[in-house]
Image 1 (cartoon, protein in one colour):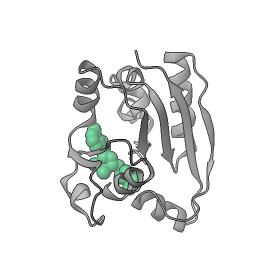
Image 2 (tube, helix red, strand yellow; image 1 turned 120 degrees about the vertical axis):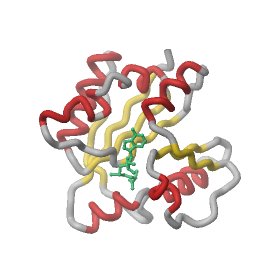
Image 3 (cartoon, helix red, strand yellow; image 1 turned 120 degrees about the horizontal axis):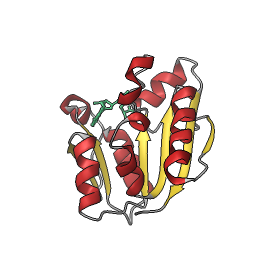
Image 4 (spheres, helix red, strand yellow; image 1 turned 45 degrees about the vertical axis):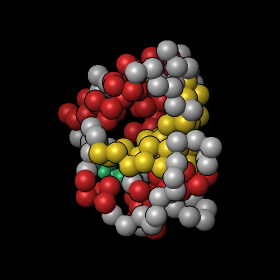
Length: 157
Ligand SMILES: C[S@@+](CC[C@H](N)C(=O)[O-])C[C@H]1O[C@@H](n2cnc3c(N)ncnc32)[C@H](O)[C@@H]1O
């Protein structure tokens, strides 16, 4: 959590970078000193996205990094693209990037984006080079799993 926030804050020094997770444990793991433009926030994203949208936030970039896959078919509504908050997430706009080790997750996500916005997301295999952006990215890649990345430019509405 902190690792990706720190790396993105270093990559985009002109922007505020907010890393959100509901897990205190995840937020407090060692991630090195954070740059002045980085913040870690403990929140449930369902609330956070709704409040951000109500407040008129329009992030330039938005990353969903290795979200919980909820692989059982009966859990479809718990995946972000099956959750009632999904249209709000898309309405925030910006360049949305999703990374996952589960191709079905990103394929479904792309279909749901198209359903809501009419926009075609770009989905491709993601091969990390150099530093890993997150601990899960490192774990999955080092265990030989294929990683997937979705990117779509959204309009804030
Ligand atoms: C598989 S872990 C990935 C963690 C980190 N992004 C990474 O790539 O190393 C999924 C994370 O999503 C967080 N999470 C799941 N549902 C959430 C929610 N509704 N609001 C905030 N965080 C959530 C969990 O606490 C967990 O840390």
